[in-house]
Each structure stands twice: as structure tokens, then as C-alpha cells.
Image (cartoon, rainbow, N blue to C red; front, side, top):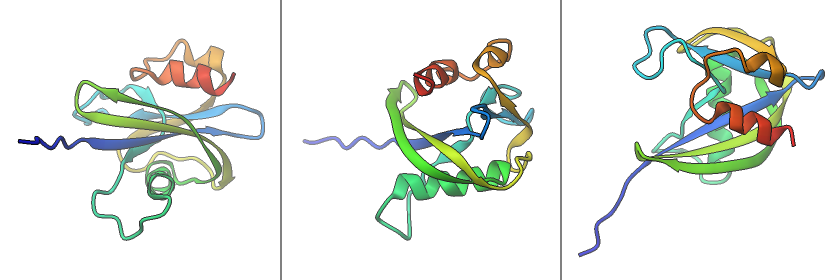
Length: 136
């Protein structure tokens, strides 16, 4: 008998500004997973989308708007990986279209950083590796 496996899809954005810095968001201290850690803006892909085409990109744009109040453009696939908790994580690079970053949903703080600056922050797993990959 075939056993179906279900997993969550998580999308994240490495957003570059005009100075080639990227945005990180500090997770809420009330978050269940890694509270207070810095990570890339993003979140879960809606399991009942109203749209079929570009489902990852549309969800990522929505999540970025909800978390840090930015509109993004020029989305380009960077990488994906499967983690042991049953999540497929998909990362994109992109640029800022409009808005001023501010902490909103599930976010306590935001900031624009260089790669050297983030090395002193408490980062979620894989964040530093993704940033290094995006800068290659």
C-alpha cells in the first residue's frame, strides 16, 4: 500500500537593497520556534491557494508584506532543502520594490546588514549559508 507523505513548504526571501545589504527579521520572543533569532522574511505556503501559477512566489510576496511591510520584485530561485521536521524550505533572492521595513506579524525587529555584520547575530539554522550562497 502506498503511504502518502505530507509536508509543509516554507518560502524565504533574501531581499537586497540598493547598497547590496540584505534584510533580516528578528523572530518574536513569544514565537514557539527559535524566539529572538534573526532569520529571513518568509513563511508557510498556503495549503489552499486561490491561484495555481507562481504559488511559491505569490505566497512569498504575501509573507514579506505581512512580516516586514515590503513589496519585493525580481524573485529568483536560490535553493531548496528538506529538513528533518518535515518541511521543504525554498529560498529566493529578490530586490526591494517599495516600502520601508518595519516589524509586523511575528517580528520584533528588522535590519539591513552586510554579511560581516550578521556573523555576530544569533541566526536561525541555514541562514548564514543561504546568505553566503546568495552573494556568490
